[in-house]
Length: 498
Picture (cartoon, rainbow, N blue to C red):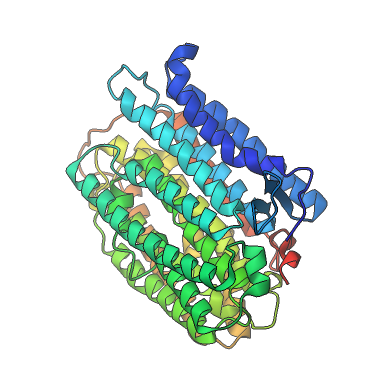
């Protein structure tokens, strides 16, 4: 349990500023502002500055940032805490949301009384609410508070899926909601068991009190099971492809890059910060097997898709599988954050978020320019929206695990960890997954770069909307220059939980 630090109020601002943005959207007519995008972009700029300040302070001090809410320390009160991993996740979220905001401004920049104005207002409000909930997930230290953050995240994400009001997207959103609520019920049941056992839900306190008994293991199993449904781990992924494929491109980018990462982040907290050591090897193997099944099955399904956005959505489920391989690659008795398996898993998470957001944004412009996203009929896209196709290809490098890209470093670290731990089957799955990703990315690029057999009718796309996708793809590639060793940033503040 840490003492409050002088920069702790930054953590509160990270959660509250997006909420202030939502309130500002409500009163903007009284301020003489007619377009919600103006308010939203100002809030995004402030939010990026806050995330940057938190990251800089973590690097400078090499210690976690702590804020005790209301002056009441746990277990009576609540605290927010940012360690190195939280700082990286917040920076990643800020980068993706900033790129999405720039991309979405021309698409959702209507006054409320104009056609589509209410849809624009809803998009920016939901984006702000989603960002606040994400930051609360990354900073929360109380398991019930994390439940509240997850619910806020769900109720911001579900409406984004059906923003266009079409019957098929409403159906996809309802399916998403059903899976999310089932996951929430399991998570809440687990927290009730833990509270009954230990009288607290503060993670730092639980780490010292939790013992390896049936009730604790059952509670953690229920909570991780619920979070797996929210993270769309195979075979609980059925809600994700139709939801992400049917949402507007900016919403798809945020959903795929960030929303499904929040439950995984909480799984990490439960596994490494709450579960009594050593974690069960059998449970780690189950998570790794489900991850391997996600990689293999969903990569093959992605290869068979006819629509571009649906292919990217199934690719998301496949890439999530890599994150669950890390549980079996971390040796018991060793601090996880000092291993290449931990660093490889985190780099996979970050590089996938950046690459997948870039892919969805690029796919949105390709579909907008051609009037469809049928993979078989993408010929001519390379000439119509060359920057978007180039961004898609760069992001594909990371999914394939080719150098130079963050995906290459991440998969190489995971491969090395698999070989060192003797888990040869994990190494084979990673290699095969990379080949399958190369197949479905190459299939799209081959069609997009081909010349159309006949003249096609295209729509003009503003060039400035292509740059955010390219910027995210370049960031995913830039991660390929990270050294092949455990990253110090990911270990900051972890010593507080031995």
